Length: 148
Image (cartoon, rainbow, N blue to C red; front, top):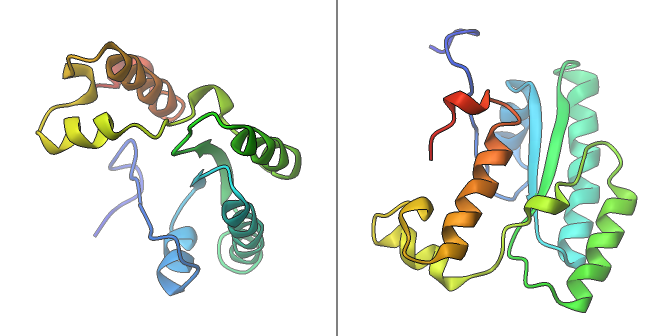
């Protein structure tokens, strides 16, 4: 059994569905950190997730709070830029971490599948991306304790 204070950070990664598993995870959490793509479906999903988190806050966990939202699978297209504006304009409960967008690069998956960390890649852009991840994690854990 987990006891509060035993760990510095416990990360619960849920599938993108609004079922009982998500409700239980939110009820046991202090913070919500969202990951979304910059598209219509993610905007709709975020609206529904906001409602779900609000319900969990009201009935199960008053201490639950938003930590932030990161954009994934970023390709820097005009459509994505427009949807990002929609997300940042309507998602006011937490900071949207626009400076740390996760790009859609096949080399990310290839590097991780080979058993290497992004910071061990021969591609400079992946090593830079590893530092972006470090910045994201450092928002919860002091930077001197963050290793990738």
